[in-house]
Length: 294
Image 1 (cartoon, rainbow, N blue to C red):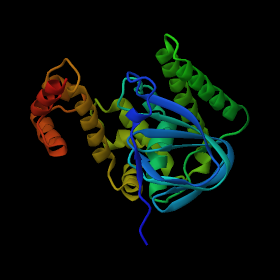
Image 2 (tube, rainbow, N blue to C red):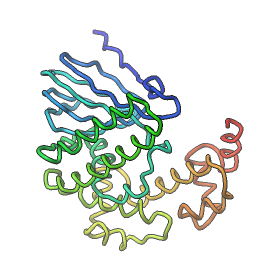
Image 3 (cartoon, rainbow, N blue to C red):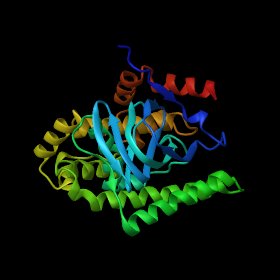
């Protein structure tokens, strides 16, 4: 039997405004929705009804008040839908719209947007939030405010959407912190460690400092990262530093040495080596390529 094709969606095909890499839309699923993936992060709010969300061979029931994120490239689908109404928010963390340097210091942010999608893909636990009462009304109100601004397209709508979305992410990150009791205990130290690394990746960080921030021993933290994420805390830190350097090299200003130091690399030669190993080009070569494309 031939498997059904996997549909792929691109953010650029959904945009109302080409200069605004963001899309928000209500959707109704009164029947199954095919297996698909996309090149953007998707934040989903379940407004009404229920169904089953399938991700990488694992099935999770969803219902009114659920909020969850789906990473780019992840195949997923919906079945068993019963008057399912959702709001989909499509965006990319790599765009200027998403200024997350302060938000990334919240453990709840890493729980909802980093750990939940990764561990759901591995079938570790049902991810996301289950909101109700005033907490849900607040999030839904912010979503409808964004929908109105997005559809009207009045002057300054970009700023209004940016403000409302930032507020939503912070609110959800706080809710993620409050809902920690519903998640496996092992994820809490990891979320705290990720938040600390995001705030201090420019600095020299010791295993003891990171363990103190995560409220566990350094050995236990290393074991949690290895078990749940198949990496180590300092491999995660190295990836974080490289990703930030990669982003900054594409922007104007700053020498390669200055960018390396600002991202936590004290040795620019070592930075060039690990950068080339990761991206297949030296920092200088990558910067030249990016500027030619501009």
